[in-house]
Length: 396
Image (cartoon, rainbow, N blue to C red; front, side):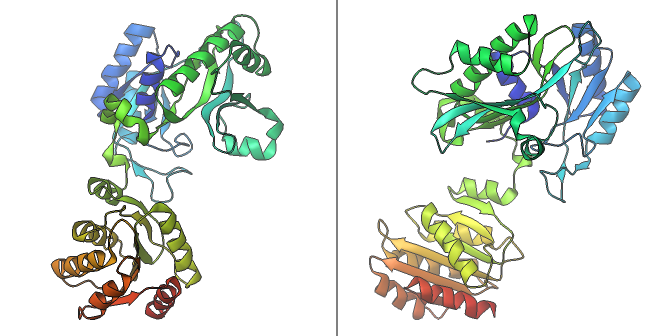
């Protein structure tokens, strides 16, 4: 589950990570009041107005602006709130900005230069270990750094038996070229950051940049956090951080019906029980000359209600030209699924695209007979090749 920058920073702060302080605002007037509060609390004359959406690269799209006085705060907030912000991670359609973070200016003058650092904590699935990835090239796209100067990216593996060790935090600070007080501060920062990641059962913490200020403080200027949805039952308070406005409406609707749905850009909708079979079904669609319009896993107990919910979600996509239902009858009998398809079809009414139903497993023959004798515009198959040939036929 993705969350906003201000929410990620709040989690980090609760674990002792120093952050760039800020106050969220939903109107220009609230933004001005937030700037006044930051002036009173942190003596921050200038502030940064930052769009809050679930995407990176906000600055490149005009979603991060410096404001030097209250009039500029109001103007910057007016410009950003309500804008359709397009970044490399949003796609060409962009995302509408509903709120901004008014953040303190941390690039103040001092005895030494500021330094921007990239740092993230995530799981290396190939090795089954958490890693801390970091670079001296903060403030830039890490993909660009990896492509042009891969030698500037460091990785520290964490042994799950013992967790992050002190010598590893010191090694990170050393590799970043930090000395003196900044070195000590970075060691504390890394330890607190890893504790936050590990304790919250997160999938990723990415901070770009981590800033070494001119007075040698180390703080998180940004925070991109991905919480593991499978562990949220242990962190129910984080569920309140979910922003449905940032998610695809059809994916939200699918979640309410306990369906695993991901929208894609193709022309063949698919409804399958089991994630592995769903992936194979998408391959079959491509082999047949189509493109999958979605990933939809209805789980192991497909029935009339889940099939109906699946139809309603798939048919919201105007690009869908056909629907392939691929069910393996192991836990659930194929004839019951077939009857569920028939009932759902009749309840929904006129479905404007052809439907191919491939049922294999317990009572597959009986299921095919039910479909064939239903009188509905539904094509049945038992073998996967039959289903693929039918997809080719209806698309041609």
